[in-house]
Image 1 (tube, rainbow, N blue to C red):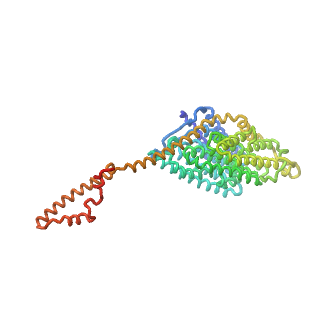
Image 2 (image 1 turned 30 degrees about the horizontal axis):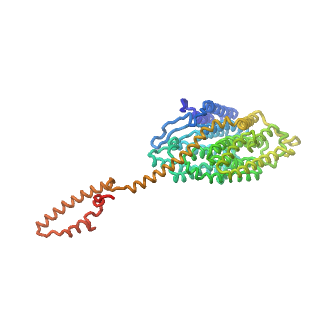
Image 3 (image 1 turned 30 degrees about the vertical axis):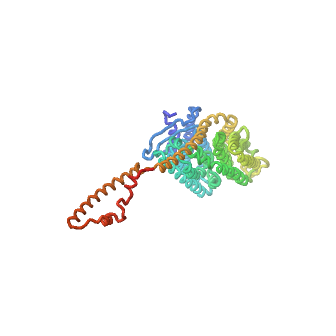
Length: 594
């Protein structure tokens, strides 16, 4: 379905317009107005994004609201946008999370507020560009651009080690992106060499899979770019530092949106473009994902800082997403996409909860707390809902996602269900233990009770309650009514599964046909049909005719001088090689073929 109105372009660039307005028009002294304008812009953006589900055709597995314009014709680059059930869900998640980030920064950020809100809106624009781009070069531009505002958010408004964390985040992701760029360029040139069409257009690339041997190397390049963003073990070491040092809103958008960019890349591009390599690497990817699930859970249990605990839990949770993707079946992909959305909701909410208590006490150490349920019961209730969601408790969003991942994994290889189940159990252990230490038992934190020199903790205000309530509604809505989400994603995921199956066979057939064509050409080679040989023969004939004429002139000259004609001497003078057809052209041309 092609859009009459460029709704996707409006979605992508409306936050940029808002960011420029805040940056260049608003007075930096009017902090409250800046906050309200940023909130209004993000709310309007969310309302615009709601146009997609209300006009979405659930029976159409293809891309909808397509916008396509030639950008740089010479290099096959297009401004090409489109959305299906996969990208639409992630667009809605992004626009919703941006509102939450603005609300979470209401009192948390007070310095350089104009720049902060502008950068937050730029992160939204770049993330939406990634989810909606159907041209690989356009996708890469947005992929790299999202690093810039995120690095500044961490580096300027982060904690004590913010510069170290920002640079580590930048170096890891930028280097990974360079490998991905090499893979994109290799795909571009190899496809052009194979078909004569040099393009970054995924609509064309999806229908013309390249040879399996070339897929192997491009998959590795894509893997390095996407796996760093996930992040997948062992490329995850930037994540805890970035999460811990980022401001609350930075941690929320990093967990809820930016970590999904890598898994989206695998799902959208690696599987259909590189089907044979994806199938070949699937056992290894499932093994690495299983290691990430167990490793992330074990490291999480050992954490003493609440924010770092939530950060390490993301390594384990994203391992589930990767496990579902490389199960390479419909159940696994449904569970994977559900977990991408669920992780954005539950982990984003956990970072919000940790930020709320840190804003009051400026302490994230787990051992410093105890018995918080008594002084802040509303906060404790929302924290409990978030914990249950993150551990996959039945009737919450996390349950249905993990269930589909386990079903898909069992269908692909039952052995990998074992580490996945262990990961679920460990996740329940560290989350419930966190809740027990912080909220149950005796009141330990000085600010949690009344007394001399103490400032009792305040429970959630109206703004904080509404923000937490929005997460809670999504937790139970997806957990109780998952069909509303599954119906949206299922046709698009079915198309990806069919693309992988069809393209893997097509790539193998194309490769076999190419080999057969080369062998046939070698076996049926005839010099008489070779234009180079024919041209060489004609040139030799001309040279031969000139030599003959020169010989006749020499004979006439010798007769006039009274010298006898010496045939052998004449040949030695004209052809030192001793052959009147030194290149063998005449012989090869005149010789009959067997």
